[in-house]
Amino acid sequence: MDELSEAITTDAPLDHLLATAVERLGLPPLALVSATGRLIAASAPGSDLGSRTTSVGVGPAPRSPFDGWWLRTDRAVGRGQQPVLDALAALLARAATAHRNRLDEQAAAAPVLFAALAAQDAQAISAIMRDFGLTVDGDLTPVVVRIPGVPAEWTVDAVHELLAGSTSQFLACATGTGEAIGITTAPARQLTETIPERLVTMRDLREGPSIAVGIGPAADPSTLAAALSRAHYAAGAAEQSPGTGARVRTASEMTSLDTLLEGLPVAVSQAFQAATIGPIVDYDTAKGARLLETLRTFLDNDASWTRTAAAMHLHVNTVHYRIERIEALTGRRVADPRGQLDLHAALMLYRHAAEGH
Image (cartoon, rainbow, N blue to C red):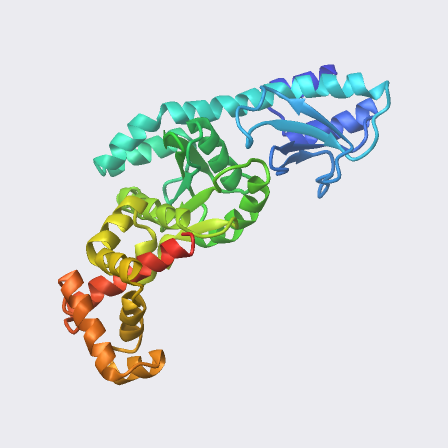
């Protein structure tokens, strides 16, 4: 154990430490993994020991479903080996505690970082990035993670799990309850491949609202604030995504009216719908009419009276009457391009809400 203790003290690579433990102490193959099963270190290359037979906690007690380290082996541990395995876990606790301390240091720097971003102070932003070991010679990619109603530490741990496990550098800090940001040297294209995969595992660790992730565009320190704003908007769009799958949106996807509207806060979306098509919905509910369907069909058919009538199996005069009623209720002329845009946007938002966005 003395050799292993010295290795921990000198911050030797954890892979080397585990390999030494297996060789010197007669332990079975070992892996050090995170809460999501992400491989942190292993006694032999390529061994993640996914089928765990024995698992021992390492370091501080987990503060979230995404936090904590475990020492794992896929073989049965004998009665004589268990105390040795426990002692090794106790030695590794130093590394786990150092990891937790790094996250706390980043969290403590959050106010300074946010002030620099708000001021768009590229020099201050660069200095903060360097303080945490990030290379600022290349581009940085902002990531926003939201989990409604959870403590700030949970979202920080979620960001860490989403961005860890690669050679890219990053920092993570909370912006408030239920939200944290990550800034990484990884390119956005790489993140769009790795984050959805990791979200699948993370989703199984807790019940409740799914994790929503927004990935911003690559930026240098002078444009990082704008890129982070776009990541925030993309996270808003991800939050409105239906279903329980990986909810990830990238800023590069927000290139159409439909995707742009997905990022609107729910309250803003509801208010806009109420101000535009709300009277139509109320009229249909009270009268059993089909004005909303008529409006949608009319706009989908490029404001053609005859095609709308054919699609709905109505007389053209009936379509004219319904459109006149719609115009009276909404105060918008359907033939006017600006009126069409308002109504079309409201219908998109209405569809998003109906689909569970």
